[in-house]
Image (cartoon, rainbow, N blue to C red; front, side):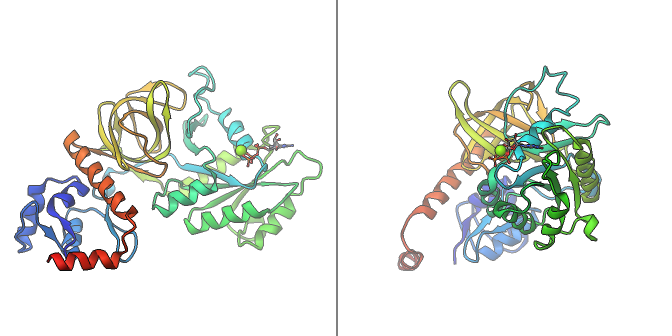
Length: 370
Ligand code: GTP
Ligand code: MG
């Protein structure tokens, strides 16, 4: 059955149509730019160009826009991206605020400023950690179900006076499903009724085995309120990050994920983006989900305008033509025409998906036409 036109395939991969036609010819397939090719052929082409195929479901194959895999020698180490999760009131926000105060670079920028969806903290030793500001469990699973893997490490916050609660369990299952390592922050240890040992024991039942219980999950007793052991928590994050050996190629067109997006009265659509690989620069033309734009300005988590943002650096992007959604993939493309083609295609695809016509009758329609 027909699957995708050569033009659309080229758009999805941000490759030139003529290059696709050449590759098809090599495979013995003669096709013009407007002709459709079948799924198997399309998949071969996608692989030939080093792109990846994302199967949304058996029948619904989506081609990713992202570029080829990077060569090992181009990879440089990058900061870990950390998400804080846990039960209501266990102190997620307090821990993030307290960690933010440990940022040695904050002083230079004139203190804590912008509240963007993500921020980066610099350690006294120069190492950096990127924190995703409490996206909420719903947003986390929504992103994950869309294949947007943004976080490297989950900090599971458990209040020592309350132990494991329903959302703690939920967070554990999210982290496990995403195969992201957990670091347990046992919070509120300043409270007289705090019982960190009970937390460690209760975690056993949910198959989180901390070191003291013979496992390898790192845990730290902290007090966000009194600022106790935050350095130990950061050390644990850096240790875990070292084990993960996180790397990315900074010297390529940028790709990233929208963490948060809003329509700002004064500034227009603004997206907070976490760069996965490559370096995003002012002037770059990019696609974000079904929207596109030209980077007019990049604003960091300290409210400063910057010229570029590399891997694991969270930035606000100004210059979008519309407001994308959290979890949307951001990909820099070569020109405006390409950006328009890709977003037009995506908007069409969205509409098709939304149309209530059952698939069977659609197929029947096509077979009548053929
Ligand atoms: P939600 O965002 O509503 O899920 O809550 P949260 O997990 O972000 O908790 P938050 O940081 O808002 O803290 C909840 C309450 O616990 C607040 O009243 C904090 O002051 C208090 N709290 C947080 N950390 C500590 C701590 O280390 N010790 C003590 N004693 N209280 C704390
Ligand atoms: Mg909170």
